[in-house]
Structures are given as structure tokens and as C-alpha cells.
Image (cartoon, rainbow, N blue to C red):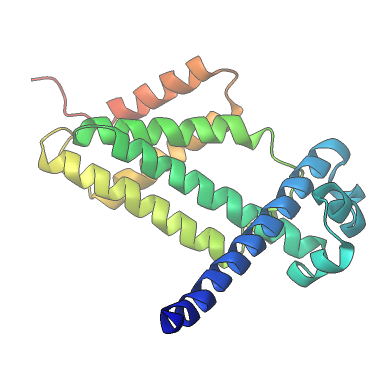
Length: 201
């Protein structure tokens, strides 16, 4: 019994520490996003983030050395959450065509809802990061795999490689960020999907 207790304590202790780290990290990133939305990126300081997150400034510096590192971490979390939303949309649908439509619809809505409301981010700095490249590859692979499944089921036109059609879809739906309403986004998704379907007859 004592041996079991001694063996289990380190694992539980490590889990508690990891949970605490995640909580502090999330609190800091949430505070950062709120401050950016209210004051703009140029006005936010590490002291403000620590205060808004309810943690000490010394604690914040243990996690992030400067504002740029907070910004990159926030961006990484946003991308991870978006990919997770797309995977959830895929898994909730039934059948190849429905899964493709669900993922493309979710992607377009993310573009529409988040592009205009994101903080004023230095796009050049963010989009050169490895996390962005990795996410783009994951996104492209996700859509390409769904298109392949649709092609195998005879639900899209033949003759074009899946990776080319995935690029077509993602580039087309990037325009959702400039559309005025969700109804317009749905129309864009339908037009994009129509370009994939076999011709009548």
C-alpha cells in the first residue's frame, strides 16, 4: 500500500502542476486578447496582462519573456482551436459529401467571424511561424482527404487531383472574410461546392 502511494504521488503531482501551468497560460492569453480588443496592440504592456490575468508580473515572465511571445502563443492557440472546430464539424456529419460541406462551411464561417474581429496583429511576423505552416498543411490535408472520399463515392467531378481541388476550395472560401453576412457566406460555400460536383446527366 505504501509503495503504491509513493508511486502515485509523483504522477498526481505532475498532473496538478501541468494543470496549473495550462490555467496560468490560458489566463494570460485571455487577458491579452481582451486588452488588445480594448486598447490596441501598441498600448498593451506585460504589467497590464499580469494584472488582468490575476497573476504576478514575475509569474507572467516565467511563461512569456515579452509581448511578442504572448502574441505568438495567442495566435498558436487560435489556430489550434480553429482546426479542432473543423475536425468536430467533420466528425458530426454523416457521409463523404456531408462531411466536406460541413468542414468547408465551418472554415468559411471562421474566416467571416474572426477575420474582422482579430486584434491588430503584425501579420508578417505571425504568418511566417512554423505553427502557421504546420496548420496550413493540416488544413489542406483535411480538405484533400475529404475530397478524395467524395471522389471515391462519385460525388465530385473526376479529372482533377484532390490537392488541387482542396487549394481551390480554401482560396475561394478565403473571400468569406469580406462578406457582409452569414447568408452571403452560405451562398459562397454553395457556389464553391457546385464547382466540385459532376455536371448534370
